[in-house]
Length: 282
Image (cartoon, rainbow, N blue to C red; front, side, top):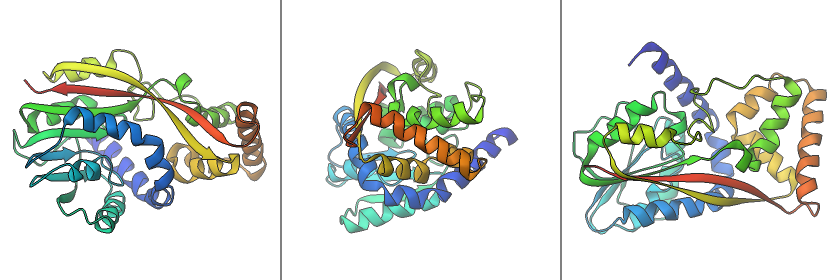
């Protein structure tokens, strides 16, 4: 792997490990927020029987743990680049007595598996952070068995994801932060129309389909929302670390003002939009 890709990978690993405690703390909120996307993945993969299924960038365990519950004699292997995120997933598996699941730290761009190893592959919100998305798609294709199914989700355009832009947009505006180059790993890297179709088709998948799914983050109060975003959002925390107390207070007040304009009763139901991507191996 080229040194630049290795650097991105190492930065991603460090960041996700640092924020694993936040993701564990807010697991109930995030799992409810993203539940519909997990259901979309399961509906397409149709897991069952003794299938061997790979969940890439599994983080704190979903959709891998839900997939494992559908199997009878089969197994799910949940991978992630961050071992501390997988520690959270292991705790959840043990707590729910899910025994047919294993965990492995590895890079999606260099999967340590033989060709034609898995009946299906899932990847919820991993693609936009991979050092090289084409390499990852090629690897997923390689490890799938013929006719194997692949399902992934990525975030849609910023304009349809107020749950992110209410905070990040305010930070960028106040701190004059220049948006990163389009191919830099980040939330909306995969949102450009046609981009994921090009990548998946280039890997020789067939029957590519893309479906938009609208979501709602029921964050409760503005304070609850602010705490969530500043405890799980690496780019947000990185930006705020460069601000003094006065600037942070100004940004927080403007974020609160934005969300209260939409939700004056302080019962936040924030808009979100994701794309569900599905395809089959030849």
